[in-house]
Length: 120
Length: 110
Image (cartoon, rainbow over all chains, first blue to last red; front, side, top):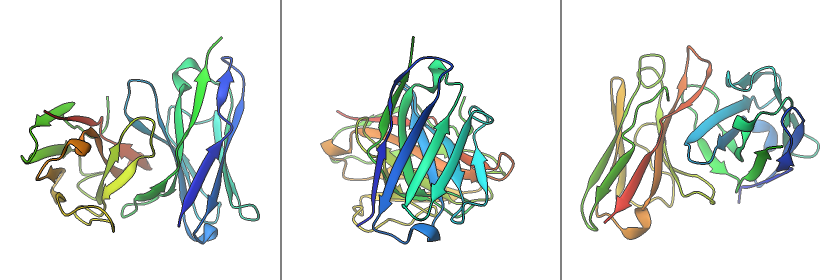
């Protein structure tokens, strides 16, 4: 059974940093792209970032480009999202999901999410 | 403003059929597959339909998807109270080089 477990969320002041992690299990980790999606209060789902199965290529939404960095560790089966220069509008529940890169892909498994609140 | 356009809300009574539309462009829906997700805030989103019309194992046959040109739709027949949730279409966008979602449709079962 695929399991994705996010952690690292919390309350952080504007301009500060936070690192999210997603522990993956139940599938061959280095076979699949991985994706971060967020949902802000009162808003819909928003794609944040994706990383290829090898980790060689990364993709970002314009809203987070140059502030967020996605990475993956094959040895620990962990997906990470380093979030710098956080803004109030980054407040959301962040979900990690399996898949998501390319024209025929889809997000077939999701975690329960971790809440990030950016506020002074 | 979302790249894919969905109606913000839909409603129907139990047992009825409801359809949710999703409009995009050639760089996303027109050239790539469309997926549909169901989400209740506080829970993990769930893949309902992938590759335009394919149902993952475990998704009831009441849910169906279709695509024509730059638009897609999700149909739910035999509506049940537990179908009350937010529904999102999504597709890869070749121009943006990213995944794009619709704004979501809140389905109310009356």
